[in-house]
Length: 400
Image 1 (cartoon, rainbow, N blue to C red):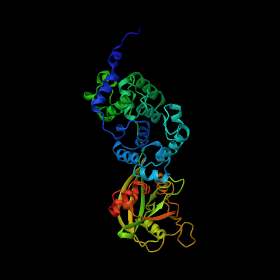
Image 2 (cartoon, rainbow, N blue to C red; image 1 turned 180 degrees about the vertical axis):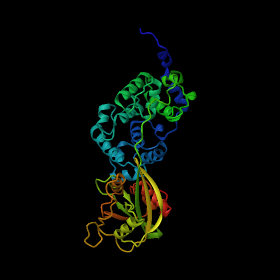
Image 3 (cartoon, rainbow, N blue to C red; image 1 turned 90 degrees about the vertical axis):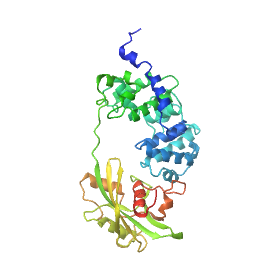
Image 4 (cartoon, rainbow, N blue to C red; image 1 turned 45 degrees about the vertical axis):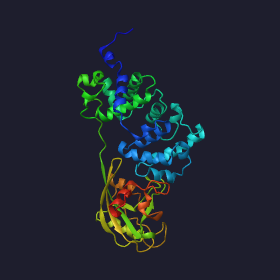
């Protein structure tokens, strides 16, 4: 039998101490009230690139509308996108729907408890598979998110970047070594909570940590250097102009002209205010959009900020009243397309503006919508872009 080292003695029982800490300090999160594979899967997809605070309300709305996998698999994509509306990154919702239909077809509507079968589904990678197995099925599997990786790297004194394969494998081995038998769900969620509330990226509160006596980084004074800080990609600032064409509707409602993002677009199928890259002269893009939308000269309503990945969007919002029907795509009348509505080429921000505005020189498919009813997240709702929700509050005072 190998000799017991000081480190081994200190780390013995770490898993039990952590799960005992979790029993007292676990965060009350909506998906933890229903720890089954389906709810775990939906929550983990939502939490990709989304904060816990933002995902919570959408999770409850989503499960109210699609309470199980069969209900989700039978839904139309437009309905799923509408209920997802507000979370952004809509490719996640599309993959969720495709995966649900595959599970219904291949596995009888039950999420599999085998890693290889989970990894074969759209949108499920190694971490999400581990979360479904451990949290949903309570099977011994590592589910190492950023918080858990930070805890385990410090605990074991692992200095490599947790996103690199070697460090990741070392961390996952330690997770399985410390995981108490039959406690996979509690243990993995305890790691996540400890990283989110105590073992913070900067200034970890070591005095409150149940693992402080076993932590190699603390013993060596390396908490601020493990794991190494990753450089964030540079923020790209993008200027756009959006146009809200508003008319009186039935029953005293206000209707706004929205256009649908074209297939193959970064936000394909989403509905938004007509938007185009800003030109050098303020309001020039909005005036060109007004010509396409059949609107009178627009008036500036305000500016909003919106973020998509590393792009910081500054959107000048204009408001106008209709003067004639919008120009149809491909219509022969003069002004039907505005090929000159492009930013100066060459700059990264210019290319981003073209992609994020989705502008092709024509509005494409349009419809008049009551924004007060469009963004409610029910089956009759439309999938509105996040920027359009903000613009609705800015221009019309609509809560969305």
